[in-house]
Length: 244
Ligand code: NAP
Image (cartoon, rainbow, N blue to C red; front, side):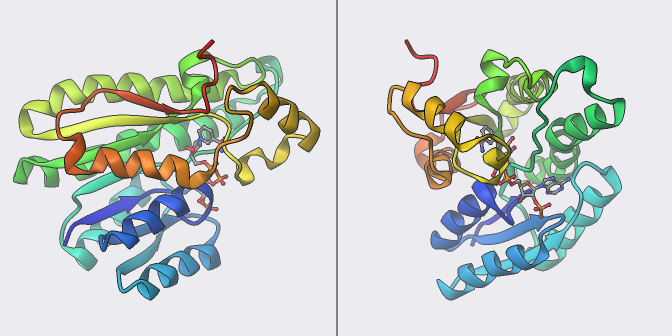
């Protein structure tokens, strides 16, 4: 049985990714930071399908906590076959109004965590000459967004890291890809006024916001045998945003 570790899997997109792997009978490591009750509900749902899951608390922006997370995951399931770096935070505001602490929080949660988790999981994958790493980027990391400059930069860093790591570990049988969501209906966007969200949805070619399970489907594809020759790529799940 394969094991997947998903960072930030208590809510939103990460939760849907965890449930989707659970339905495929993976062992699922549900990482969370501030939402323990939600994380336990995710593991319970997976167990209800007859799968195995464990919830592990770790702030993935902190290297020491990532070390403990991976060690605990290994002690429960023995190995990690798929790593999904999903945990993320948004920040909206002008660059000149953002404090260095706010900057650090966005960069450390969205990007440093990807480096920390890959650094710690890669030796397991290199040892067995196989593995899948899937990083959750963002349409803003591809295009850039005013008012979300540092968030955009953190996600552009994730995309650059993904392309380069794919080159480094491809010869070792490991693939590294991004899934890049557009505007997805999760709590992350609850800070945006609902009228503005409706307007944004109307402007999209598909005329609606994305759903978390639609992002999960792309992650599942990249983890599957059907994606065995895909690496260093970014699959956009964005309803056609910026395609015209
Ligand atoms: P969300 O609903 O706000 O959920 C964020 C998840 O990240 C939660 O499970 C949260 O866990 C976890 N998290 C945050 N900081 C963490 C930390 N330091 N350590 C561990 N976990 C942490 O957001 P979402 O919309 O599902 O976003 C998931 C990913 O998709 C993010 O990387 C985001 O940037 C990306 N994305 C989202 C959208 C969108 O429109 N929603 C678009 C593009 C990209 P706790 O609650 O347990 O702390």
